[in-house]
Image 1 (cartoon, rainbow, N blue to C red):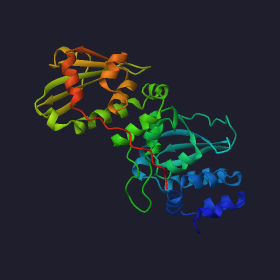
Image 2: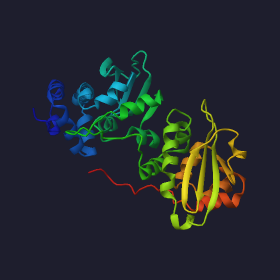
Image 3: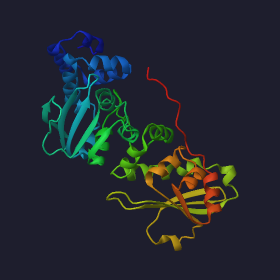
Image 4: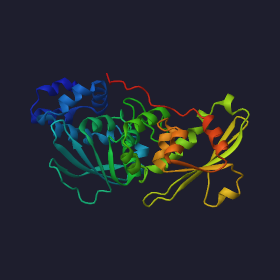
Length: 327
């Protein structure tokens, strides 16, 4: 059967349901990928199409999911997807033993599949991009385009299921976030949203990835004569404890390690930068400078402030990319 999405422009409910039921998974993914955002919003927003589209895409989920990653998922998910006319499509799925099962299928706002471990709220457009391997759940969540309530790691697991059509490789690796894309997502998000994200289960994923990449952004020429060791203490939030890292630059060579409470006096550090986790995200993505953070009280330095400034001056943090429209 043809997977030309333009067929949906005039389809009634029965025809739309038949289209998604018969469309091969690989062809459907390719068709969604080839359709610009505005056209996809128009097609999926049609009342005759949207329910069939959500149901049809989810029914194909196991066909374009990576089998190994699917086998590792266990739990239940509720999707609440807003449409262009303000409606909400709600679906529930469970994952266990490499099998995806529908929990309940409803179209009314407020419907609640019992026992969902995580609720994912987004637009129908971003849902279509996400579950066909063109969106990144981690970046969408960071930017405020995907609301996650409940088990954040299950949500990221669902977001990292999907393969490139016709290939064995995973479309999106959520554990290898591109620094510029992270910076762009942070630039789009409000302070309140970032504070909320960094108080939830997504926090260790972001922090570990940012600090893992940090040596890549050290300017070797500026760091070639430096010998500094600066800790970062990111304040506890909600049920999450404080996170501690130590960054050393020894004549151009940079290392990063996680530390524990009480290490400050034994690891030879020169200073410790203390801040909230969301303010550190601003610092690590070029949205907040060290001097501005110090003046505003968002960053505090314990120990040798000059050494802390030397470290910061040797790092070229990534910045948000200019916004570009999808095809």
